[in-house]
Length: 143
Image (tube, rainbow, N blue to C red; front, top):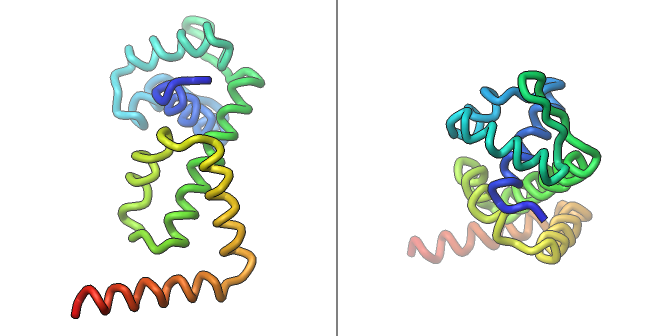
């Protein structure tokens, strides 16, 4: 399994490849707010661990293993965003909250969160009932 840092890189590379068709060191460095030299070191490590194929001065592509991990990481990220939206987390907090928790949950926890998301998506009345619960709790705390 990749480390949390490796996961961040794989997820970012996967997203760039999906949106642009390529991922450059400079794009990854900018997105992750790290130095390009740090990206190059991680790319070399990901190459050694068979998450991507890297050729110096020519670029890199995700291996099937890297692509599979990337898909799963993006799924996890999107699922957690959806979960936080459903439970009423303020929009401006969602991205940072997901970034803060995504590496600390087991895949079993992710699967159970997926079950909760599916439960709420099956019936919009459940989401509305949850919103009413939030509103009532807010009114009580303001009293």
